[in-house]
Length: 238
Length: 176
Image (cartoon, rainbow over all chains, first blue to last red; front, side):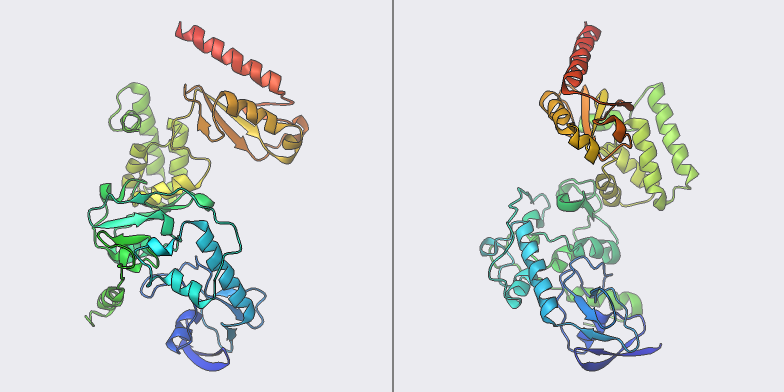
């Protein structure tokens, strides 16, 4: 396996050929913000929060989808990137109804944490206040479309790790929605195995366990590494 | 919805015409060796045959092409070309391209939305489906509507109203 040497935020780092800038940065303790990436499943570059500057490239690149190259000079924390990331979070907040004070995920939400980190103390665009439903038809879990940021982590984990592909995205543009099977209530889904993987990877309070009230939903993603290593290496590492 | 589903489902319907449609859909799928990446072509054929894509039909296509139902549903809802609701007896598309817009397409759409249905839906009596298009390539005839596939040029709201009147009269006579 060939090794690539590059510079990220002024530090010389190395990564294997084919590894993403994102992974190499995180392996070296350089934290790039993200909402759609989660280790163990494929990347789609949906959230655009991991955009980085690469010297000599005319455009910003999504770190999760860009493989490292020899001699690359990457910057992950410039003022310009910070401005972009802040606006992206503001747009996400304005797109649906993210009301933290009554959300099951309050206090341990990736969107909320990122907003705090970026200093989003107000939103400069108009809130859309869409009228969206909450699907409580599943016996163990709930889906609140008001909190969904369409990162598609649930879609990918269900397809790639569980193998059921119960979730997908229906519609287009502003009408996009996460749907189970034929856009039916989750509880009616014939393909869902009720494994709960989608719930655990969801970065916000969109997918949650029933019975949890404000701030009570904690998510645990350790199962992903456990299953993926077991599948690839036949080693069960806790 | 469920009643329509069963009527539209190729398995449960009876009658010669419907069987023929199911056979033609089957042929289209077999031509593509039931490959999942032929989904768009198959959906096109299904919509041409049935006029719309019912949940039963989508499920059947997903099963035959060995695809997850949510993926098929996602593709069908992504493209404006596909409709998941039955079409009306007549389909009227208003061209909203620049030339037609300048020449008063909005006035025509207002007539249709007031008398029939909002763009993208069908009137409650099931007679007229209203749609919009972005330029049908006949700008010299602006404003243009496409009435059951036939292009009509330099349409006025009065003319459109007359056509809709005629339609209502004809339908009443048919019923009588």
